[in-house]
Amino acid sequence: MKKIDIDIVSDIACPWCAIGYARLELAMQRLASEFAFTIRWHAFELNPEQSGEGEPILSALARKYGRSEEEMRASQGRMMTIAKELGINFAKLQERRSCNTFDAHRLVKWAGEQGEATAMKQALFEAYFGRAEDVSDHEILVRCVNAAGLAPEGAREVLESAQYADAVREDEARYQHAGVSSVPAYIINEKYLIAGAQEPETLVSALQEIAAESP
View 1 (cartoon, helix red, strand yellow):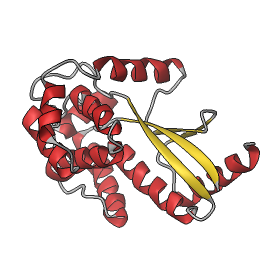
View 2 (cartoon, rainbow, N blue to C red; view 1 turned 180 degrees about the vertical axis):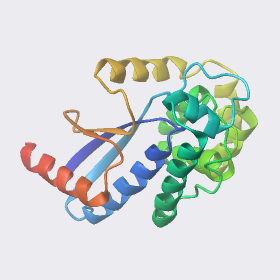
View 3 (cartoon, rainbow, N blue to C red; view 1 turned 120 degrees about the vertical axis):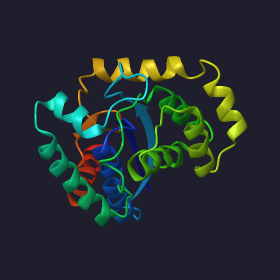
């Protein structure tokens, strides 16, 4: 069976990243009889300077994009509809606050060494978009670790140290240098870029075309 490697560049604070992965999962399911997939997650921070409690997400987004809060509410509402169709919990998407995701990315790296990066990422998406929890808070992060089926003691050790900080920064520098300026971004077989949360049908076609071109 032909192998396809997928490097996913994303941020926990990015709703389209959660939608994009759910769509990618559907595409991979449709292609499961043709290809064996390997997924690797890489860090990207939409708000690397964010600290403290943050601010309500609608006002934060309105300021960032120069639009009204009502426009942002409508945009987020459309994402909630898409997420519901995909079975993703976006119930509190409009109630969350902006927050820093650096420590969350460190835990994804830690979980990846145990083969559970995807489970960790999905637990973080659920906490932030489904429950509007602060995923910079260490207690919330430990709860996400539990939800992912991992050991909280190991996670606490990571959070109380600087473990995986260099790995996260190296990820961010590498993909920024490669020209990734928005997420999600998928690098297929370390060569082909698919940008954005594409529909499953688009991903299926793209993956089949890439596989046909690969030796």
